[in-house]
Image 1 (cartoon, rainbow, N blue to C red):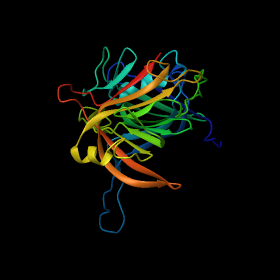
Image 2 (image 1 turned 180 degrees about the horizontal axis):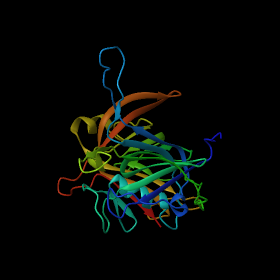
Image 3 (image 1 turned 60 degrees about the horizontal axis):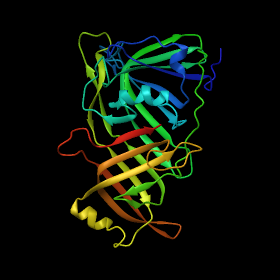
Length: 317
């Protein structure tokens, strides 16, 4: 039987107990996901043959894997979408009201806390999965085009089985174009060709001798968030970017994507990325078809008095 790669369905479910796999049903596959891969990373411990060239039977080691996929930034302006509610807490973001903010915490069980996921992939009747998974993401914001989040999760590999393809009801929220909203640094407007937000999580899959797989769950062990962008250059009087870089100054960086059909602005139906202590970490002159630009990298710092204040992601409803 030939399996068709295009007949691929993604599923993800928050684990009730971190590191304990969940059964994935059709309701857990209500995502629009692209370029999905579950890639095992299992070392084969080779042993040399005795008395001759070659090898003896080898033994597979600890069972871990990565899941990588892309999700369109979809939002109808009415409710927080499922992709955010399920995926963000497993990237060490917690929700307070309509606001997601980073959290330095290992996975827990109850309340607004960091979570782990069971993630599965059905490919034309074959099912593979990982569990105890946590991840990181990069958020691409190409001006005028659909905004896309690229996720990478690491977890415990649970092998492959034959399984019937689920028939989920896919969400139909509109896909957001990266255009039409305020983009500012220190309240000065930025005219950019693209921006990229990297949450910068470091994922560590914890080794544990009491489990068959050799691991018990993943954790986020560090975070270094940054944003890159290429705004048109400004006169020093308008914004002294090199001066800000040399002084190590922190300023507010804001990016807003309005939901389709809504006027942009503070409080409008939109998604807002906000970094209150954004510091220019790199500033290089560039050229965009004869227009002078600055290739900038912002380091998203936390407030000295407030841990986990690097940034917020707000769904304005």
